Image (tube, rainbow, N blue to C red):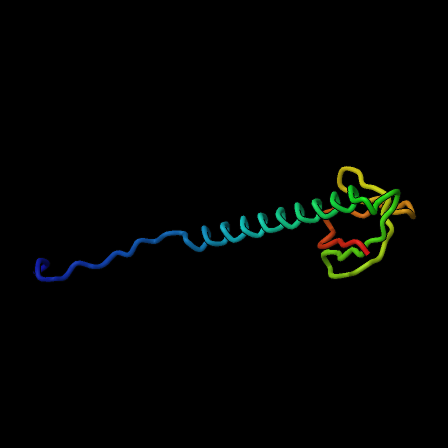
Length: 99
């Protein structure tokens, strides 16, 4: 009697959802690194341009979409230095452009 019954299909269980979410997290990190590199390149371009003598007027868009106008005089490891002696974290900058 047991021989007449069909075999039961056993599907393969994999953790593709976990793999997909980890891949997505890695892509987001890559995009953040890419955007940080772009911002750092823009800052370097501004600070090494012929227009930059001892300061530059810039429009900074922060990651919370707040826009501020500042006069920058230089940078250190991970901050911009303004003429008002403020430090702006480079990681918080989404975009920077020369005015």
